[in-house]
Length: 315
Image (tube, rainbow, N blue to C red; front, side, top):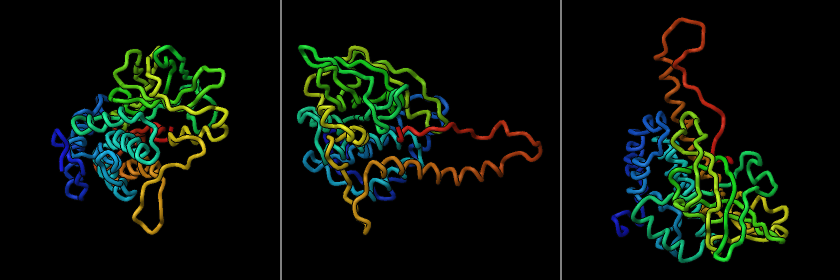
């Protein structure tokens, strides 16, 4: 079964199919990491395999996604290019979240699903702030929403916005300026006027993930694109709300798991799977580099790979 543009509605995630995608990503990975340009060619390869639609629920023409299958897919992508695997993971995360605890306006999400059959539609939650850090640590964001006659005006500065240059939708963690403020993720189309990407990200091996700062200046958003909850009701659960994108008081959405261990939190699966594949790739590449290294000289090799700390999936 295929979508309108020939993209599989139910992707083939067999080992052979995933190997083909891995090889396609690996062919471009070094080029993208050196240039730090957005990896559109590789993203299109993932899209054409139908993998960017994983997580779309049965109500929208998709199917259930088990934790095992999610891990297999993302590890395969990570072996080809960890940046592309991370971008895919963030998008799949949002589809699974919507399938379990719907938060999007119905008409808008159906349009997202329709568009996703025809072209890559990348989605991610943009939460961290340069001074405030990650919302999971508590506190209210400095990013604000102001009511207008037509909806909301969004203003703020976010950090570690994975996918920044290629997102079709930003889910921005913000709080309203009402007397009784609301807090939550506001859904912002990526082509909205007033969005500026500040290229701050330069991490070896993940340069193509486009995890830059994003500045929002007077970005107009419809009322229905902000499913916030009162801060007073969120209380101490606000940090958990920020972490999983669900209302306070609700448990985190979970993937069905076909193992004997029961359910597994899908957020951990989606973030850790690319990490595991990076570790596996390093285990193979490190010894090869060591064998090629010239003997002699006591100093640090100028050709040794260097990594800076930080992982965008943990913001």
